[in-house]
Length: 294
Image (tube, rainbow, N blue to C red; front, top):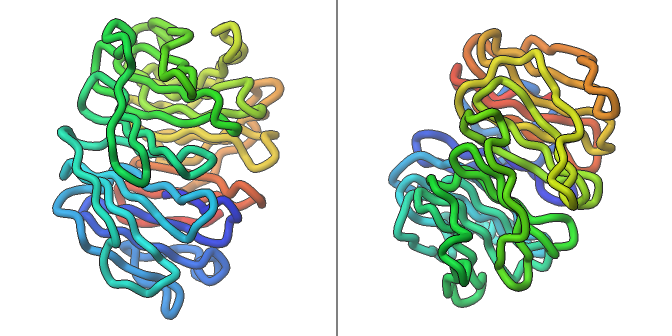
């Protein structure tokens, strides 16, 4: 799941390869979207992919959504036009785990089953790799995101986190064994690009100083052994993640690491969550086939 930059749309990707884009206001009225069902008059559904959707992201300036799939493609949907299918397709050599537009919209990060970050020109789909092979991850890349100004991006693969120069595509910092040897599953920037959250299979969310690579804080109390998300609230007062054992969402105070609340969410493990960038609204997706808005 992903909110658009203005918070007015919500994109959902499912294991059956479908992608849905809903108007947030209309979706909020329903609260629970049974089996990712269509919200009448407010949702567009696309069925272009042959395999599961692993990630989605909105273009920062245009009404365009990109989806990343296990079928090794990224597809681009103009959800304002009413077109029933993707307008463009970029085919990678590997299954695509995560995708992220540069803040300008001109480039696209792709985290794939390959050990190297794939950086695409969004207009031509020309792919760039790090100039030094020694900078590559030692395992498939699970996630990758840009900082707010696009000067940096971060990625995780295996048990390592890497921070990259957004212009030269060179690795400027590696945080090895970031989660005590456990795989790092997802990450996101905060603090205007000064801090980084990571979620790992050691059942911890960790906050890092981007400039030094120093561990700032550990958020504990939620069991996570497989890929799930962590994120800040829109005002960065809270850190959110999930407990796969109970199906709950868990919120911590970002400044202290103290657990603030647990929300009974799903009857099965939560697969993903996202927070609106503009208001106190979050979305959770579970193995029970339900999407909840909070």
